[in-house]
Length: 127
Image 1 (cartoon, rainbow, N blue to C red):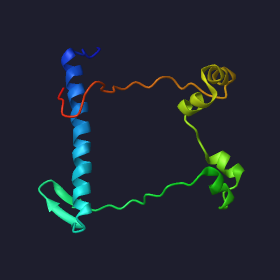
Image 2 (cartoon, rainbow, N blue to C red; image 1 turned 45 degrees about the vertical axis):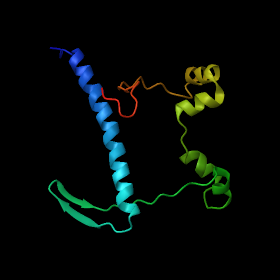
Image 3 (cartoon, rainbow, N blue to C red; image 1 turned 135 degrees about the horizontal axis):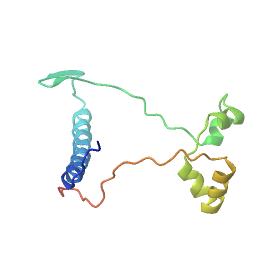
Image 4 (cartoon, rainbow, N blue to C red; image 1 turned 30 degrees about the vertical axis):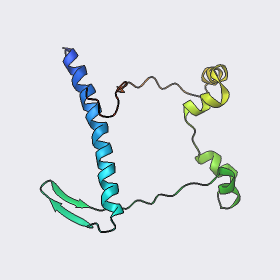
């Protein structure tokens, strides 16, 4: 038996998407405020659990050619390890050549993925 989807379900999903975006922005702003103070707690117990500082390296990858020239990564290793998104391939080769690559089996169509993206909201606007 199929589940009945109503207008209310779509409205609720849109509202959650707006809230998700707002919450992520608030988290980012608050964390920036706390860490930029220079006086932040490594651990802080709250009524919701303990906040613990996590550290992740933020390292940029240099130009691919420089990486190949100045490291033990050879061009062959790089080519075997590198992946390029289908959208970038399409931008580079164009629509017609992209479709040819699909027909030749160089690119594989794995079927469409479905999700909702909420469009048309502006900061401060509620759904």
